[in-house]
Length: 188
Image (cartoon, rainbow, N blue to C red; front, top):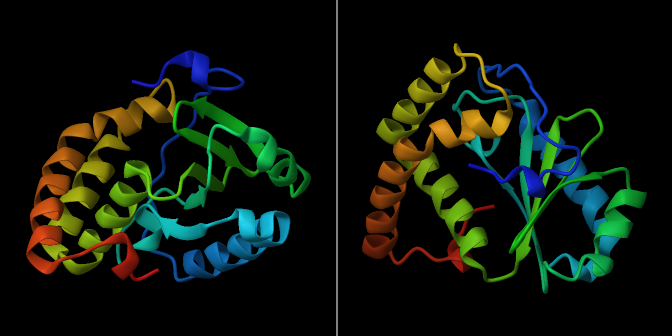
């Protein structure tokens, strides 16, 4: 459960819509990556497409999720003003993580520290789903079922996926061990 104190602007009810995979999502990521890199230059240590829109064939909320890795996520002055000048709005402030988004609410940029567990888990989850169709189908089924419910906030919907995400992450961790997967071997 996300503490309301970390949500800048408070809780915001939104309809959860799951759309079939859209070939435009990777292109949107590319455009947003370029925008982030233009705003931050080398302060952006990594910019990765993550979340369901980064997994070909996986239905998703039509919101492109991006992981932006910086040296020190707590040093907001080093990146937030430039991201805001580029058109993003700060939405989440919590230890080890910030999130900015577009005013249209169709892109979420999750800011974390380079080399952090946050970065590793997002990339591992994505790479695992890209290679394991059974887990991809399981995850999609849960998301589609949850989208039929009414949620007070998108974070409540995300929290409802915790059990399936934990089960998939356990298999992803075993796969990472078996294949020697690492963040440096990730496939964009």
